[in-house]
Amino acid sequence: MTHILTAIATTAMIFGAQATADAATKKIRVPAQFDGSWTITAVTNDGPCSASTSYQVQIKGSDASIPGDEIDIAGGVSTNGAVRATITKGSNTVPIIGRLKRQGVGTGTWRTSGGLVACGGSWNARRAG
Image (cartoon, rainbow, N blue to C red; front, top):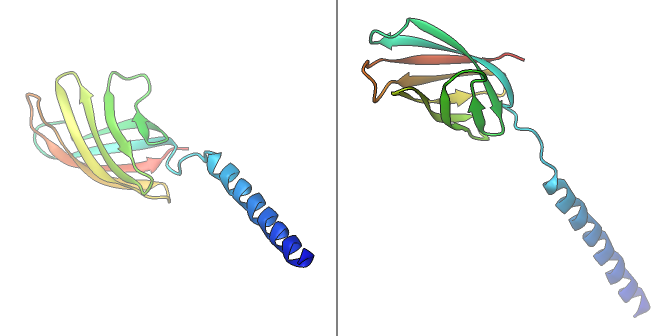
């Protein structure tokens, strides 16, 4: 009987220690795989907008921003790399969709809405750092 109780107690301690280790691991936040600086180049395929424009975009967690510019980005990047956001500058809004890849590249499409000019096109991304 003593051997059975000892075996049960030992098993409970091992599983308890493993559960504690798992809980501690889950509390550690690992930086998102898409965090960092990205160069985004938007190309116009439809409409009178600039033929090509480049932006430096900073991603942290799922949030994206353009440092030092008066551009607001709502939305961001999911853990699987799906991009869904709306970029706003003044009265112009530009919904974008696409995907970033772990290899440091990405592609997608964009189309203006709510502004005076209607344009659309594609975008390419490359990790800058």
